[in-house]
Length: 285
Length: 285
Image (tube, rainbow over all chains, first blue to last red; front, side):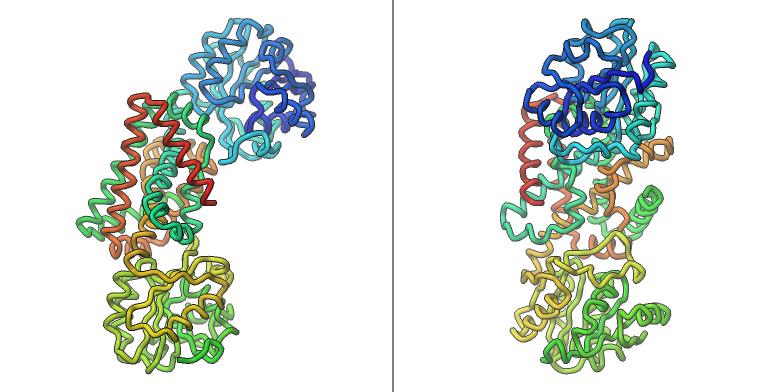
């Protein structure tokens, strides 16, 4: 297994996450090779200095790579793991940036034994997507989850940690089950609520466009995630289905209780519940 | 009815909203008189230059005022309207900054006929509360809703508009019913969802405090409103109960549909719904 400074790294998928990671890794490794479906994406990434080489062929991109990082939507990652398997060189570290981990790790389990698999999930992003939004500072100071398989060698995990630190992030090693449960509550549920807020608000916004002027910072922040990339979110929700459904049920129970207190005018219960949640939120940030 | 530059304005309640408004009005009117329960609050506001005079007596504060602006929680506003009624001078403009308007306007209807009532609701704020968070620029560029009663004179409404513009905000005249329905969806529902998110996330956060490291910008923004002042929110929710319950039901229907699509793995429906909401959000901001 190569050290980072000597590694040739293939970044597959040059959207917000892949483009940003490629740019953050340049100068910290031997070469960054971008893999994208469209030649135009490669040209933009080359011109922006985010990658040193580019190819539209997944096979060519990974053939001489010491590290492959998959930065596509989760269900594309699942396909690409199988698709590139025959072309991966010995001792190659295969990572991904997908937002759900059980499905990805199950696919990585199928990789040939001469390859080192390591799940990854950086806890950063923007509601904007695409290479135009890429920013090499995106990973700065974020938690970057690493999910090894039992077969992952200590050396491979160490290289994974080195890559995470090289882009300015903090590695956090978790198992896939815990990762998927946590992000269901802390990332996918916020998206679902943000989506439901905008969907519900359409009732007043379409009835009278002036209502738009009444939507202030509170609405803007609470609804921000509703602008997230659709393909990314569909893949996330479908590959973390049970956990997301569990989080949705838990949240709905709380909303139902809130509605009950309002119906009953139960000021005491309301005050206690609002106070305890407020305290929890203040402790967090 | 005085013009703004000659008006003596009493601001009742020197928290985030009242303190900020007082500071923004200073120098634009003859005098700003602060009314607060505690002498210490007055001293801080005087020292910060937010008010020119201060009193802990509501009666004394309003006795010589040309304009009274109530900047307390909604149910305190309801009490203060009745409490100060005997002391209000002729032609005095009585405004408020409360976040719900039907209850406030119903109370204002009881004011003596020699007084001019005008409901108000500036669409700005912070999740921080109290005078320490006050900022005379808080109102800059925000929509400031004005709700006149049938008895409100054109001159009183004109003075209300002048005050709104003086603090840098944009006046928007609405009726109380429409106001309350709109803010139920655009302000109170976001709070409720933010609250429910934090309440639900406690399940993973208390089980393992490390989960905190996984809560990123998406969670932070979606949960921001959960840190809002509890008394303010209890008053808002209880005085806008039916509208909030209506918005909660509408939102729950959307969440239930989302859960159904997930259970059925209905990718087509999911993609259509996520795309249409994303478009709606992108059009808004």
